[in-house]
Image 1 (tube, rainbow, N blue to C red):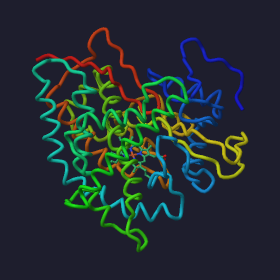
Image 2 (image 1 turned 135 degrees about the horizontal axis):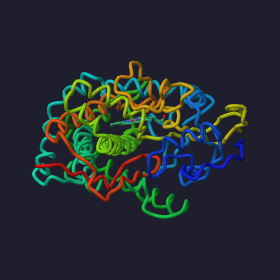
Image 3 (image 1 turned 90 degrees about the vertical axis):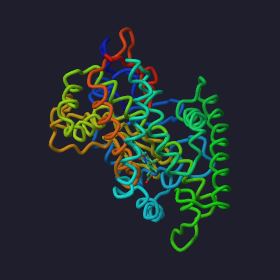
Image 4 (image 1 turned 60 degrees about the vertical axis):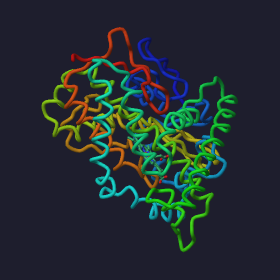
Length: 396
Ligand code: HEM
């Protein structure tokens, strides 16, 4: 399955195939060149990891062969909707959910998001320093999402701890991580159930209230359906934009010419954001389960095997990208797969893009020059790449 080439001393290759606590791009290249299909074992899965763009797309675009049902064990007790629903039912749920995140709906949230970002910046700007992760990147998407979804914003800190308990359990070892996820998962279901009970009595315009009234295929959604949608949204809505903002600001703090460009040419921010999504790929990988015996790059995959799909590596694969190793804000075509691909492509991408764009615009307007606090090095979490220790400084 792999060749026996050892990585050079200056490249650290994780035995998970997932991103490391530092910049992962060199490791991805090593994997593509020497271990494009490799056996992996880590707390989320035991199976096979694929690193080439071509194999990644094969997996994402063939949900009948590579199912997402049972792929990620993240404390859930029933399949997550729509992530663990295979065709043909998957499209029925997307038909219900897609309109909630349509560009028109997201545009309605832009002004309040802009004002929220400015409030968060107001709280730190005079200090000339902040932990960007906890001061900006975490509260921004959490407050937008909780309001939209119908969960109490005053419990933000508790909810952030719960999603971290699933995505980054604070324990060592596979068994302890699974147990922690299962306990935390019950608390997430309980929080959503509480909101369901409240919305049943007093419906408002939020998502939970709308779901309780919604139908799929002529059938009203059950309360379990609403919980299974809610559980997935809770994790997706509270973590991914935070991780993306962390990765982007960590990059820009270390690349002053690119930072200056966003300040001097704010119209370039949308293109820069897409390029940084490609380069950083904050959701570094997704998981599938093979439904039949098959192969990837000539390597056998057996029915039941889990396949870890390395999105970060596909997004930097020189077999697909021109100048794969350059961060180029002028890239004309940017078909990155930071939001996944195929039928499960991210449902929240319009919302995520709006939050990231507004965050980058307002930050660079108000803090036109910043750098990493001397003596600090950004440490990335694995899998979903947030940077909890992102300490920035600027002149006041
Ligand atoms: C920059 C931020 C984001 C990134 C990088 C991201 C990335 C992804 C990726 C890679 C997938 C594919 C998962 C798979 O194939 O297994 C996905 C799916 C999904 N995302 Fe996002 N996401 C982001 C923001 C959001 C937000 C804000 C929400 C909702 C509030 C959201 C909701 C979802 C849902 C519901 C799915 C499952 C779609 C389906 O199964 O059909 N995402 N996302």
